[in-house]
Length: 254
Image 1: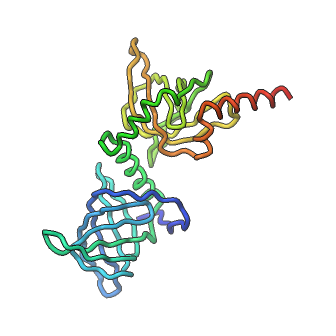
Image 2: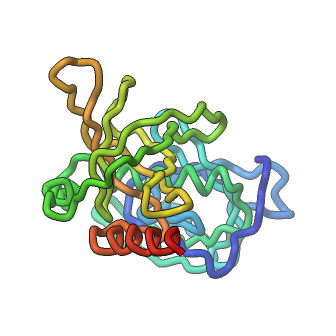
Image 3: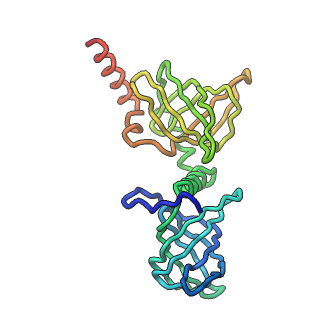
């Protein structure tokens, strides 16, 4: 593993339930070649995990893990077992291990966060609130001559920024007119250039829907914010935006 850093204390971390396979080894000075064991993660965040295993482990042991995400993504980290709880299931005795990461790369953190957002925004019953946000037409408003710079968010490459016209804005997301091929569930990093503000609003979004326009030359794309500063989110309501326009106009007059 490369690029290891210690977890930052006080960092906000989203913890979520999931079912993901794991391989792990217990570090020990007395074992030259530790055996690789298997388990199942039941809860995860970028600062630690809980996983179930048939092996009885002691609190305080150091464990190196490989988290096996879909699309052949393997997240590696090392942590300390802070709590071990015995579980009794129909198929036998298991142990739940709470592991706090002590060594993990920023790339690995981002992979865990992206897995969370992919689960949160997938079209499943537990994420029906996202479709509800899509239906909140009253919260959207037009912003005049505004545009967005966007590119697909990837770990190891940076695409060139593209531009698209903004149709509507809300504190939950935006809609654009895009002249490019777009797929649902793509994750973008964006910069919103709005007349009311001198600095662009930066965010990470996911493509929720893509609708081809009548002529087929462009698409109407709906985007949901998955990462945005709370102060920027508050500014993206109609009343705050109009006030921003007025304040900007007053400053220009002076």
